[in-house]
Image (cartoon, rainbow, N blue to C red; front, side):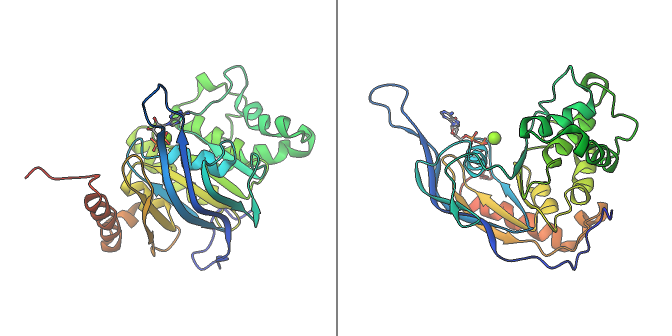
Length: 274
Ligand SMILES: Nc1ncnc2c1ncn2[C@@H]1O[C@H](COP(=O)(O)OP(=O)(O)O)[C@@H](O)[C@H]1O
Ligand SMILES: [Mg+2]
């Protein structure tokens, strides 16, 4: 199995997920207070096989957007389509990774990965080999029987990613998956990530509050405004894959992160003291 997908691999431009004016608000918590707007009407699409990074400040509605796309929450207005059908229940063909690894402490790494099979009624026997392959691919060969407390934060997050990929979902949703890790581990996981997901077959929505990480990870970067947010701009990132440690040093990279910063400044997310 090739772990590297070629930079030249064709990407199918058709949309897997389409959001049309999708918004979310939560009911007011007292009389006289307005409902809380978590996401302003947002229009976007996530295409087959692409990695979309969504970057925005804390509280702007990133997690809300992701939970709407997963189908775990319903939009307050607008339409959300997956594969041509309106999404009315949790989308089955998705895998989700959160900032917290959410591993069960009483299960070893392998059994945590296999949890995905259990909840889906897939037999352990048919899928154990894939679980072991995934763990090996993320560098955890020899740690299959280790328990979460015996693993580092980075290793635990790798196990979470394996669990999210076990059933080969079409859509991988990641909500600040590396945000709880130290800076070096975070950079390493970003490097490994593009090999792990084999982005040619899977659509990935990767949420981050880190501009650098968004540009490094994404085929496209969607930039969100401050709370209540919406997608203000979308940038195509034309940096070849696999991206490497040195990708961050090339002028194009700095130009892209500068572009994200400018959009944040235009929308008042970032401002200088004058
Ligand atoms: N279940 C909820 N009930 C009420 N308000 C919520 C709920 N979930 C999120 N919010 C509010 O919606 C806004 C956006 O939250 P969130 O999507 O978590 O932001 P982000 O992930 O970008 O930090 C925040 O102001 C948050 O307080
Ligand atoms: Mg969040």
